[in-house]
Amino acid sequence: MVALQLQSVGAYHGRKLFVEDVTTPVMKSGEVVAVIGPNAAGKSTLFKRITGLLKGPGHVIVEGSKTKNAISYMPQDTSANAVLTVYESILLARKQGQSWAVGDSDLRFIDEIMKALDITAIAFRDLGALSGGQRQLVSIAQALVREPEIMLMDEPTSALDLHRQVEVLDFMRRQARAKGMIVLIAIHDINQALRFADKVLVIANGRMHACGTPRDVVTTEMLREIYRVEARVEKCSLDHDHVIVDGTAH
Ligand SMILES: Nc1ncnc2c1ncn2[C@@H]1O[C@H](COP(=O)(O)OP(=O)(O)OP(=O)(O)O)[C@@H](O)[C@H]1O
Image (cartoon, rainbow, N blue to C red; front, side):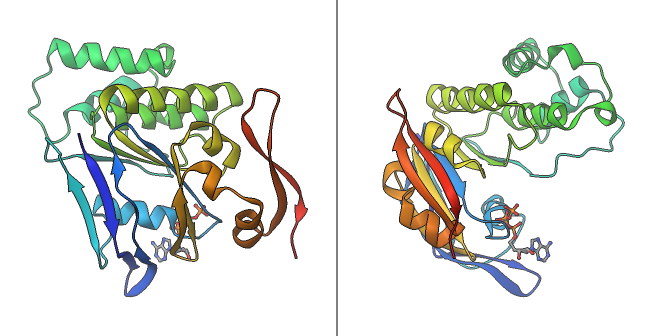
C-alpha cells in the first residue's frame, strides 16, 4: 500500500517560484486524483516537482513504496523524434533502469497493455509516423509498462476521441484499483474528472485552491472564482453529476 502526500510543496522555474505551499491530504493506493485548474495555473510544474524534475521547497512524502522508482510521469508533450518503432519504444520504457534481459513476462505484460489501449495494430510503425492521438496512447503505454506505484499523467486524453477518452480513463481507474496504484491526472475536462476521479485537486495561480471529493470541490462558486464561468452542477438522468456552462462570468 503506497501513500503520497505533499507538504508545503513549491516549485521553481529558474529562480522564480511558480508553485507555492501545496499541502494535500494523504492520497492512497487505488485512488484516482484529477488535478484541474486554468491554463498556466501550475499543474505541469507541480507534476515535475513531484517527479523530481524541478526543485522547490517542501516535502513530497511517499510511504509504503516497495521500489526505488515508485513514480512514473507522462508529460504533456508526447512528441517523439527518436527513430524507434512503437513496440521498441514501449520495450525500452519497460526496461529503463533495469537489466536489459527481456523475459517472457516482459513481453506478455507489454502485449496486455498494448491490447488494452488498442495499439497492437501499430506496433511496428515508426513513432514519427503516428497521429497525435496514437502518440498519446503510446506515451500512456510507456508510462504503464514501468508498473509504477504512483502515476502522474499530464493531460493524457487531450488528443483522444471521445471513445478513447472514456476507454483510457476507465482503464486507468481499473488499473489503479487492481494494482493499488495512485493515479494523478491533470485534465481540463471537468466532466471527465467528475466521472472518473475519487478526488479533485484544484490548482490556481500556483497554489492549491481545494482538494476533496468531486462533489465537494466542483461547485458553481469554484467554477465562477477559478474558471470565470457561470455554471451549474446538475444530475443527469443516470444520476451522474455534470457541469453545464451557461457563459463567462464577469
Ligand atoms: N520551462 C519554464 N521556464 C519558465 N517558466 C515556465 C516554464 N514552464 C512553465 N513555466 C511557467 O510556469 C507557469 C505554470 O505553467 P504550467 O505549465 O505548470 O501550467 P499548467 O497549469 O500545466 O497549464 P496548462 O493547463 O496551460 O498546460 C506558467 O506561468 C508558465 O509560463
